[in-house]
Image 1 (tube, helix red, strand yellow):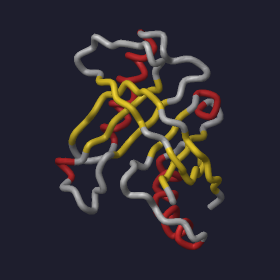
Image 2 (cartoon, helix red, strand yellow):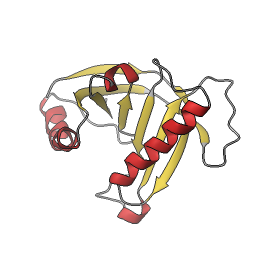
Image 3 (cartoon, rainbow, N blue to C red):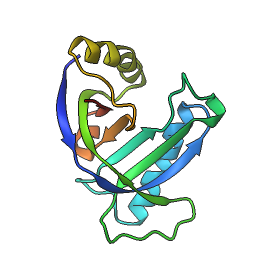
Image 4 (cartoon, rainbow, N blue to C red):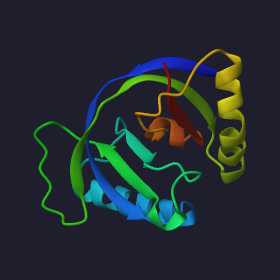
Length: 151
């Protein structure tokens, strides 16, 4: 797999959270976030959408796994939506893998990413979350990114 190392900046994000097993419900949550973001005029060509699995399913019971669907927001943005929270994403050094936005390619990537990073001498920084990053211009080309924090 080909990846690049990128310093991802810190962002202010609005997010919706789902607690439970990772899977198809994550997509439903992402669609809810995008619908809300569109109503708030946040979904545009330069929008950055993040999917953040907050827990390692190998170490956390499926019913306790947290998934956040996020969108980067301006500093001054305030939400009054009860289902949407605001937080800071710290950013940092990430290995960024670009892949086809299909369930098969994403599953394949999850199986290959960690051995590839180890082969290249990188260690995952477990203090920061792994991200799925979606930028509209890439999504139109059926691409997405998996960003793994490294040091």
